Image (tube, rainbow, N blue to C red; front, side):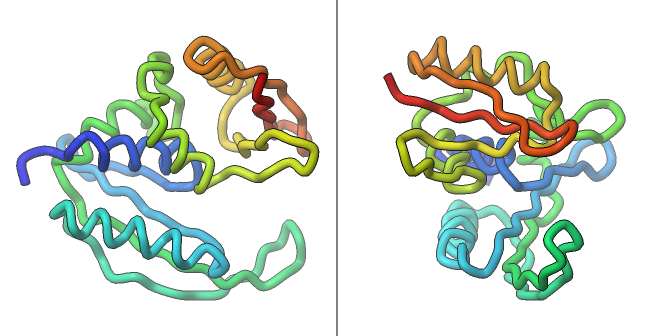
Length: 177
């Protein structure tokens, strides 16, 4: 495989906007790790199968449990990682700062297509009972969340607002108009 097809790239961008972690190895390779609670097992297996079918090299699926100190609970998770690949380095350049911190690309609006949004919502979204969706943006700065809101408003005419979950953490809700 010489490059990622657009649907796979869009899926990966959606996952990276959510919970997926992206990292780099050297100056030319990247990797992505995927982790969800076991209740989202089918979703993770679907991503795994799509990436495997695309020809991207993957490490095996793993299951494990760990303590979540935020809620004093034991969480069971499903996890996998891509192999280090030059094919992922473009995404590294998009989403990692020079200090290897996940950041939001300034041109994110052009990447927010229906596939990207679908995976972002599946990865990190919650349905709101009275309508709308909450997208957890805990790892983004307030400026990055505001950039996402502007991009969603411009691209899809969505009304979004920021709701603080905890100190220094943000969420925003998407309300359809």
